[in-house]
Image (cartoon, rainbow, N blue to C red; front, top):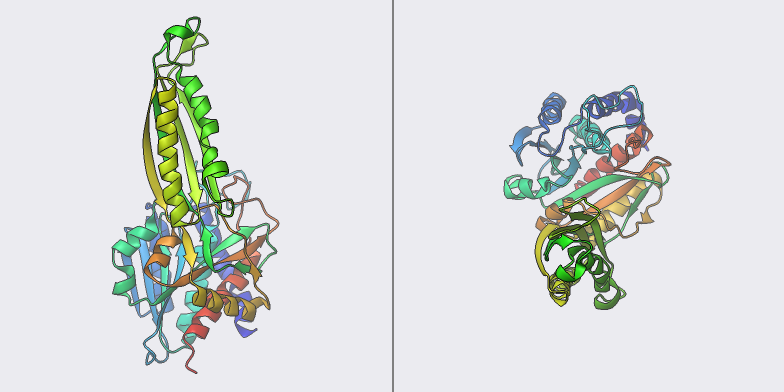
Length: 387
């Protein structure tokens, strides 16, 4: 298709942007360099409006079509932040920042949306307005929520919003999506257990917090096996077991458990929180100990709306000729906050046979750039068709 051919021509330029972002990763809201480059390029492209500082370091570009009589406004979002991982790829454009790495492909997401913005600003072959959104702090900072609190949707009149993520293990440049719940809610918990410490040779004089914690690690799995509807997806993972003593002969006074709880519905999310607190407190009490639960709600369930998912499928089909059904994902995605504000859809684009995301040897596959850029343009032009 013509758009894809155009992006094949632009591939060296967009790849250079991507590799520059890769070499200079920034964490959370500290995306000043990346945001500055993005804003500068959007101005160079001739966007009608470029606004910085939405969501602290977020950037928004407004591109009006040849006509805006339809009054329709579509938002396209990419994330900009990296991860606190030491890169192990050995690439000549590897991270220059120790302990920071674009291990999730946000460098590629940003570059692809910039490429689409360049094309859309050149051609303006649509009736309405495209709003390109560059978001910081997807990796745990809730940057999507912060941008929404700053009035992103209302200020720019966004009526529907779309996101995209690369996906290792899926054929290069192909697309996959599903309607309804897609990515999980990502809550965290910390359980502080207090007993009675003492000498390991005198356990009868102690309330053994390690014993309580060990029972609790197992008991929490009953939330999945005996409390949740078997047809509902839920994951409970205890990922940290910390005692206050490293000695061989000490029963510690305190033990702390930490972990994550993943669900795909509001009902399961509420049930899991209630059961986790009850199991922790009552299990500890059975042994004469106390458990205090600090439950920390994270990103909500990300839900693709039905009509917008269909729009995304049509755009993907126009680019590649097909769009697969994506699996449910128990990972989190803070694009969920934007989908709570407006209808929209999130799609996956195959990264090919690469290391998985969040791995020190991961690298975004530059060969998928034309497909990703073409999808953004096709989606915008279909949704804002003058026909």
